[in-house]
Amino acid sequence: MKKILLQLDVDPQPCSFDAITAIDAGADTILRHGNVSVDNVVPLVHGAMFTRGANHLSSTGIFLGGKDISKVEDVASRISETFFDSIRVSVFLDPAGANTTAVAAVIAAKRHISFATSEGMKNCQALVLGGTGPVGQRVSRLLASEGVHVHLVSRSLKRASTCCQIIQKKIPNAHLEAISEKTIGAVIGSADLIISAGKSGIKMLTATQLSQAISNRVCIDLNAVPPAGIDGVHTTDDARRDGTKYIYGAFGVGVTKMKIHRAAIQQLFQTNDQWLDAEELLMLSERFMLSERSSFPVNKPINQ
Image (cartoon, rainbow, N blue to C red; front, side, top):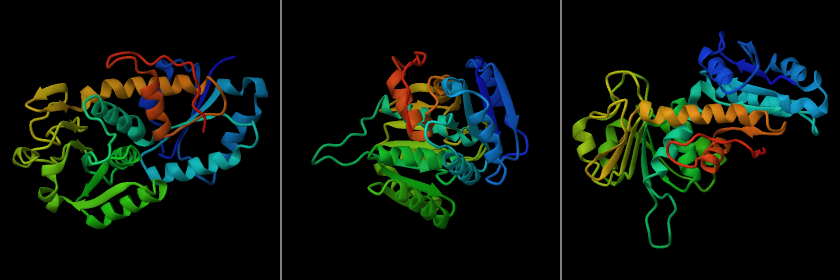
């Protein structure tokens, strides 16, 4: 039975990057659809659900992507509502690559920082620059779910506050704080972890500001387009040691991101009942990562 991936994208043109990665991960056939919305997705999902018998539904999977993260989430909800009983297929969500990139960044940080806290110890403090963007929101959500105190930074304090509220609804015990770019100086000194997830080609943190981050142990810049999002970080940095901190650039994190993406595609075809959002992808990554440069063997399902 051929492995068929239904690639659904809320953008007008489905992303070629996602299609190529799926082929490299072992999908035999990709059916690509753009401009997918809550109004037209149900017939597409029905096609995936009812064309094959129940014993072969694991050979069909859905990949959901697109740049507008709110539209992707709305479509995801409609897809979930369309399934019933065991008549369903597995789904992998990665809007604008936000989930896989965010998970890769968190995995990189966890190589050097323990997020777990014990009585009498302060929470790990994280500064997420560009926190209202797709990747920034996902990074903040994942870190918050791990017990990290997240300072979510944006040019707009109102937008930062809104994102914090959205994450707080999903993770009631989350420690989140909205921060304006203008007031970074008040918190940067306590940041154990700094992640820049701003738009490509925009400098988010100067060398002077970084020098004030006296507690910083891991610094990650996810911007691959010059100038660097964080002064002094190179795109190829991969756990480069600089004094007391480790530095990662976009390509350094990107190696892990690609492993996660391919592993998730392979995981779709293990069973028909998986739902791979950011949290599930993090579980997948931690479960199957044997070493910092290992591949991701896939043999156990992660269920919704």
